[in-house]
Image 1 (cartoon, rainbow, N blue to C red):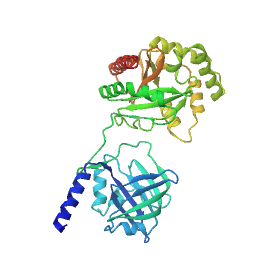
Image 2 (cartoon, rainbow, N blue to C red):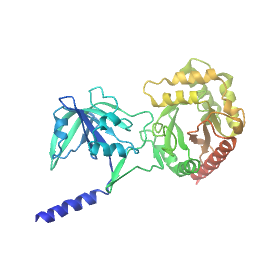
Image 3 (cartoon, rainbow, N blue to C red):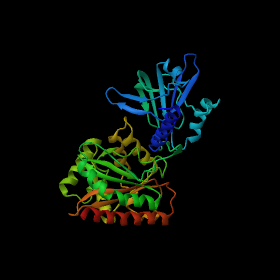
Image 4 (tube, rainbow, N blue to C red):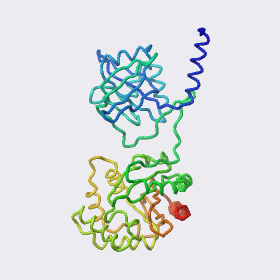
Length: 384
């Protein structure tokens, strides 16, 4: 093959593979003389769970990779969708790139990029030849996802962009039946999120816990739903009256007993009052951003204590949002409506999230009415 034909083949190869989107990451280390060094890669990938390994493929002609290799360690910062300028600063080796864009070092001393959606800190496990590139395997020492993580930056067809996610869905054993139901109503959750500019979660009950099965409208509000998908919380009084309100007496009693067992406090009249209020309204409202923040921590943090959140709810007393018309409420944090199967049993919920707390009465009423219309449509999807 002639040299020009080989060059043409390489260009065609690059152009064709450019249709496959990749993430954009900054691989960094601190050179032996203490100087921070970094390179941008589009090849970062998960490799193994046991042992925990990740990898990337630097070009052998790189002048930065040998300096990282000799340190024996590296960090990976997966860039966020709004960090194209950060990417270009590291690609062009801007002199102030670390001062402007680097955050505190990792525990191992490697720089990391501020605002990234994922940080991973690694020791170099192995380096394997891969044509004109090396395949680097890193053993994970530490990793972290920021509390307010957004969507990642993508590189495709020679340009930068961001993924568009109408919705995401949980995975896991034991969720099969509920996930099939959630998948049926997911188009309606996406429509609600699109119409209202809010997040719409699809929830269900699995093994006496409420599970966030799917989320639509990711990225529409601060925090996003990504951290909530797959999260669970005990279906225990006084939490989750939407799923207990139309259940039979035995199931309601089990709901009360789980709450008493977890909190060491009787659910009492407040829980029963909430059940009656939800039945009368046909939907559920929660209020109070401080309480919502504590609950968010309880379902997403490894060190959270669900029992403490339940005790807070018991001590707070009846949910104010269930006692007044929605137009008279302040600090609304969520609206939820039941979704029923063909037998009339409540099997899922549609849960609106992302309220600022400053919505007008008209806006709250419009959100509630759209949610109830969507729940009725979802009933039809499960009954078809």
